[in-house]
Amino acid sequence: MILALVHSRALLGLEARPVCVEVHLANGLPSFTLVGLAETEVKEARERVRSAIQNTGLEFPANKRITVNLAPADLPKDSGRFDLPIALGILAASGQVDARKFAGYEFAGELSLGGDLRPVRGALAMSLALAQHAAPTESAARRLPKLVLPEGSAQEAALVPGAEIYRAHHLLDVVRQFLPGDGQVEMLDGWRKVEPTERPFRHGYLDLADVKGQAAARRALEIAAAGGHSILMMGAPGSGKSMLAQRFAGLLPDMTTQEALESAAVASLGGRFSLDRWAVRPTCSPHHTASAVALVGGGSPPRPGEISLAHRGVLFLDELPEFPRAALEALREPLESGMITISRAAQRAEFPARFQLVAAMNPCPCGYLGSQLRACRCSPDQVARYQGKLSGPLLDRIDLHVEVGSLAADELVNAPPGEATAAIRVRVVQARDRATARQGSSNQALEGQAIDAQCHLDESAAKFLNTAAARLGWSGRGIHRCLKVARTIADLAGARTVQVTHVAEAVQYRRALKANH
Image (cartoon, rainbow, N blue to C red):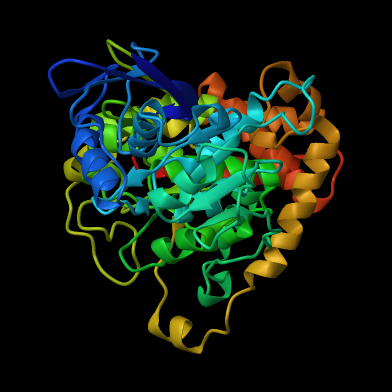
């Protein structure tokens, strides 16, 4: 009886938990059994591994009873990432490679029938998990296990600082490194250590200069970017709401390395990561027919939804009232906490969801309520039902409500280009730096007593806010959000204290939708 152990990782949410692939060869009726709570794509590895080993000229122990256990047994395993460690375990158990040389290595990769290695989902999450769970007392040389991955996956995994990543094109490239004997490991063309490269933090965003006019909406976007606030734009079709939203991410400050890694790790889980989008804040724009599961995530095992894929970026919801009610209500908790927890009977997964919500809607079913260019044909009941699709608790969590008016033909054709994104971003970064230096976070993140401490109002400003809140029927949350927006406006103006002019501007951004009910 021969036993071989190979180490790999299974994804559960953003976690990449360790998995030990145990391969046992025994005499008896020939069979190939795979156990350990494996999904269908993992069970299909039996045929891929068998064909890959035979087609590469290696010996598959077809006359043995092969048992492969993926431990721990209660951890769900999915995808073809276990093909490579299973194949190496069979080769080690049959004496074709030296299992002792596997110490300090972890493997993941899908095999083709010819033995080629194909990229796997979540490689960056695996590398990030190794870095986060490294024991600080271990020596630098042994702190992180070496990770062996296919070509495409290795490039993204190497983005994690300190990670030691090897890439291979073919099963034989890996086998050559672990042959029995004391020979030196050769760096062949198919096997290379992936050297970490400094990737530039570049801007890949559309320019806000493309949007002509719309001074009020542009100002609201600047405030939202400076304070991390969510925003709802309401206006007639063709007024420029989508153009404004698609250019919002360019106003945000550059990502830090940690933010870029978090965003890329979630994108890698969803199969959306590409190296040319490194450190570019994502803008996710799901269609209004998207379900609640598509937004928050789900499945078995759970995968991230649109709100997690927008982590550290922008979630743009166009035609907001047309989304299913359940999908919209699912946004309420992530808007507050920045996390989404997906609980199922057998498992529980957490995904980060710290995004900025940018939403757009028409004021009525026909879209022309309040327009100076076309008359609205909707009855008051139709308008009320349409706007009533958005619940009060959801609207209460959106900091800025702004009307986007339609432009006349001469305003659109003859108007000069708007202010460029780069110029606005400078002011946004300065305002964020002021907030960070003062309180260590963005204004949107202020909670409890910190709101009173940082948004102290003089007597006239407090009186103005109390009057506005009473007339508009605001909740306590609405008042706090107005205070945080006023603090952001003061930061943009370079003011140390929140004055009545700042509060007055903040109030008008929370009354636009109320005025149309």
